[in-house]
Amino acid sequence: MNNITRINLILIASIVCILTSSLGLHSAFADTTKVEKSAKPTADEARTFMASLEIELLDLLIASERSEWVKSTNITYDTDMLAARANEAVMAYVSVKADEARRFDGLKLDVSLRRKFNLLKLRLSLPAPSDRAKRAELAKLATEMSSMYGKGKFCPQGESKDCLTLGDLSKTLATSRDYDELKEAWVGWRTTSKPMREKFVRFVELANEGAREFGFGDLGDLWKSRYDMPPDEFEKEINRLWEQVRPLYEQLHCYARTRLAAEYGADKVPSGKPIPAHLLGNMWSQDFANIFDLLAPEKKSAFNVTGILQDKKIDERGIVRQAEAFFVSLGLDPLPATFWERSMFTKPQDREVVCHASAWDIDWLDDLRIKMCIEINAEDFTTVHHELGHNYYQRAYKHLSALFADSANDGFHEALGDTIALSVTPAYFVDIGYLDKMPADSLNPLMQRALDKIAFLPFGLLVDQWRFDVFSGRVGPDQYNAHWWKLRTKYQGIAPPVSRSEKDFDPGAKYHVAANVPYTRYFLATILQFQFHRALCEIAGHKGPLHTCSIYGNKEAGKRLNDMMEMGMGQPWPDAIEALTGQRQMDATAIIDYFQPLLDWLEEQNKDAVCGW
Image (cartoon, rainbow, N blue to C red; front, top):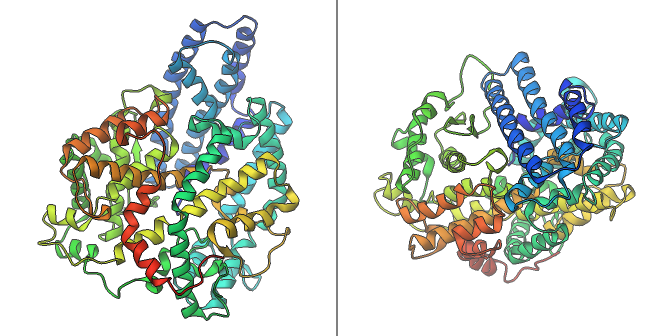
């Protein structure tokens, strides 16, 4: 979540060619479209149109995936260009076909076919206006903002030789405990987003115009329509889920503020006030993981995964084999031989690669792979289990056609991988023979997970809440930055370390805003993974605290999991979640169940503190 793969940057850059119709593909379809629109459409025509589209789209997707794999495992100018062109072809095709498909909008079709037409339209995160000049302008703005973010640097002395990248500044935020040094890094990165402000104002106008031409009230309504419910109901649903977990976040916030006050002084971190945003270890305060040393309940945990792996002399391939064995223990088939031949497990010494962990489905069938620069430590052991969760999900829905070959909604895929990672527990290590006996119970692992998962929830909600308010016109350009900080204080209980104004554009300091990438999926994934975990543990007959459960070796849990994965996106997500959990709505109470021991401890620690802000 903290690192975004280069494919997102390429997709944004690709929009230039799509929106300006610079590809011959657009003109190639133009004459056909005119002929089709001259006659009244029929259901048979719609079926023929969709059948042809899915065959052509799949061919383009496979070509794009292969190009992207080559580029990601061997970064050169040429592989960059080849991957970009392959992505351009996919996005251009979808753009053209989504426009053509509008002629079938009023037609009565069977449920499955109508769903495919809706999904085609909803694949576009940035629909363009039909006016050619406006398409070109929107393309230019999208590319400029993405590039400004990617090239952003802070030069403390105003000289290029002393400039700091986002990586440099993020390292300072993560490791320094000097209040003023942290503040300089925090403010410094936000100087890079100031020039985006006016571009974003126009970007909103043009993106909304494109969304309205596709039948949506604004771009936010298009994004919210991806969740099988009316847009206004979706916003209510998100807020309902937040209210279920808010008490736990507020207790974590209260405890963190007390410990930060002890570190920096009550004058800098006053009781009952928002926490200064630069003190939480992350450039966007989206998690508190990097200040674990200040918040750990115990000085040392008895469960040291990195030490266990190193003592066992497990190598990179051995970690992947163990993760595969987890899924096989659930009754699922081993990965194909090609997975082991074609995946990248370690960083090559002879070329540049993208080390960010990712799972790949090259041909939408059995050419599954992962790409990682695995290190022998606790984080990567868990990450490998997560990535293989994606691979097994991809294989489960391989029988579905192109538009249905995905997770039930965009939160499900990430949630599935993280659900598996939640089973990497001390009990799992005992079961696989990596530990002789259960270690002493400790709150440290729960705290570490809370600083990652619970601290993230309000941020995961508010990024798109801000955009929904902007896209809808509820918030105008004269209130962009003020509203951003209003939401950050309301949900996260944080405040900027220095005064901010409408000359600033702090939302643009987050990649997903600059690059127009929807964000609510990450909030939903965090909710869903615990709901999935609780349901699977109940199926497995687990006794005891939820955070101690591992579903390793339980074939009934594996069957239920696979039954849901096989549904892909072919049915509304409530059907998919019901297949696994028996519930037809998302439920964040599983998070409270999971973290209950930590919540009890936090409430005891905070009993004399002034909580809230």
